[in-house]
Image 1 (cartoon, rainbow, N blue to C red):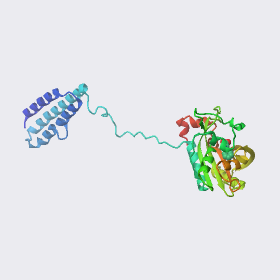
Image 2 (cartoon, protein in one colour; image 1 turned 90 degrees about the vertical axis):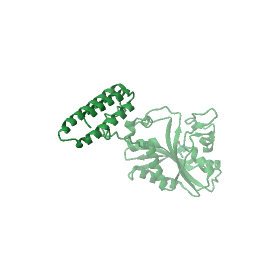
Image 3 (spheres, rainbow, N blue to C red; image 1 turned 180 degrees about the vertical axis):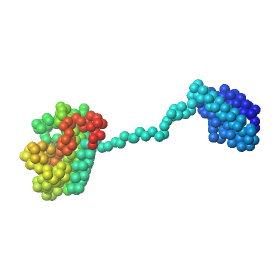
Amino acid sequence: MDMTDLARLQEEFKSQLAEVSGPQALENLRVAYLGRKGKLAHLFSEMGTLSREERPKFGELLNQLKRFIERAVSEKEGSVGGVDSDFSYEDPTLPGVPPRLGRLHPITQTIREIGDIFTRLGFEIVDGREIETEFYNFTALNIPLDHPSRDAFDTFYTEQGHLLRSQTSTVQIRVMEKRKPPVRIIAPGKVYRPDEVDASHSFMFHQIEGLMVDDRTTFSDLKGVIHLFLRKLFGNHIEMRFKPHFFPFTEPSVDVDISWGRGWLEILGAGQVHPAVFEAVGYDPKKVQGFAFGLGVERIAMLKYGIKDIRLFFENDLRFLEQF
Ligand code: PHE
């Protein structure tokens, strides 16, 4: 090994470099000469076999050759591109980009929270359908075709005569048709109404229906269950009051208000299941008794979190959703 070997190696490198036409070939050439097991590394490792006098001179020339090759490779990279040019400036010590964590929508959270309370009271959570027939949305619920209360609900029909349900009470019928009493279910889901959208109205919102039927399920049971539920959800200091109301599918019917001491707010409708409803599903109204209720989920979430505008739930604005 001597100086002429280095000169030959340099010529060899130059001619090989001239052949290079792509980034991968260039990288291979670089590794062949400058890599940890490359030709230069080999020569450096053999320097120990030289005499003390030769060593510094040889070392200097070897370093020159190394710098020559490095410069030639990086110049060539300018024309063919480097294989690692995409990430060669990557700094592995920089902090990473944290993945965005998703979370449940506040309406979903509210539905689950309410579901948990009723599950502990022995209620089962069931699913219904959003596309319904007039029978389930009206007729079986004791709302005849010419009943005025259809006006507030009548909307969103398909050409085949199906409709988007306007209340989750449809699920009462579907469940009772399939099961014998006792029944204890809640049914959360979307409902649709011909309402103008504003801060407190939306053409789509969520309800939770409740139904309990047994041979003796009285109005006191209704009151007890609702009271327990409201205290679990809002706290023991909550006050509630029942106001007489009318629903075609319950008798007697009530609107339930709650209060923290400053005014009353209506949050759900309820009542004893109407005998006509039991007849529609083939239950004997003389043998069974039950209550039903329906509550608006957005309403409850708005109360619970102090939200003033229902539209916030549906705009998918992360600044809002991230707060829950
Ligand atoms: N379905 C009624 C509504 O949408 C609420 C309700 C359900 C009332 C069950 C009584 C019993 O307003």
